[in-house]
Length: 331
Image (cartoon, rainbow, N blue to C red; front, side, top):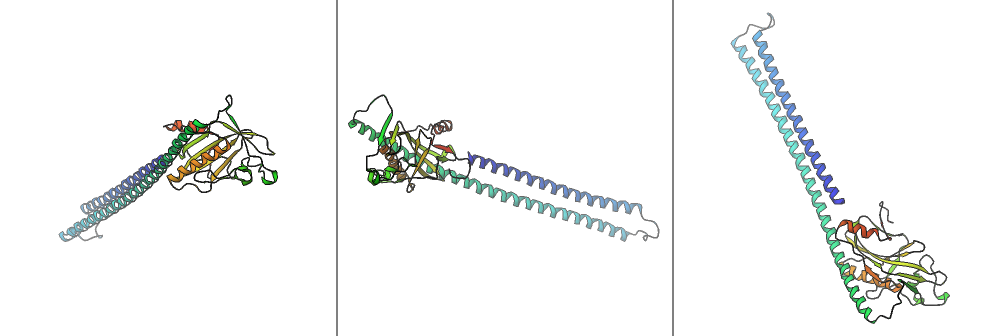
């Protein structure tokens, strides 16, 4: 939408430029016409003066030679006026053509820049979307295979209770700001690294949620279909919900893990140590992000984004950890 507004603004600017050039040409033509009329008026005044004659003593009696000289002067005046008008018209035309050429060149360069940016964004979007779909397909296959040997599940609730393995308090430093800090503590038996590609996800305390500038930036979403109840020594159990958000930021895919603490409404945002630099890396980071949440007890599933803008906006609006940016500051 922002690019469409840029194109519209460029078209309006071009139209205003053309109107200014046309107005300048009209003014130049009017000036030339005025100069021509002034020359004609001078010729008429000279002819009338010659026809009426002048009082005695002011000039000698007319002679054929004097009449010839007066006619020559009138012809020279007329020729000079026509020359000046022609020069002025030529200058006006050249200036108008120069301004039009500069305007056309600027418009062409701007259109090419916008088209290049749009093509790059579409390429990055397609690559990230393809990577996200590949991850979703692979996770679906893994879940299907795991379901064949999974133990019986208690029915009647969609809440999974997850507790960190017991360890002496002296061996595990509790972090009250991050209820899942035990995932990175070797003494607890859990690891902050997801299996497979070994991506480490670190808590970004500067983020209160996952921010996006436009719906088109949101490439893919995954959310837990259950609640995980995390219990840490010294902390009461708390229901949580997990999300994996893949965004296109300035033409590059970025992956975020977000955990919503239902009781307090707080959102914990985790980022990989290094964001993916290619579609293949994006595929691997998304897979590790899903595994990271599954370690806590979440069962992840893809969010259907829809094929049109309205469906995409409706899907994004149902994800509480996503907030649209209101200004240049990062959330």
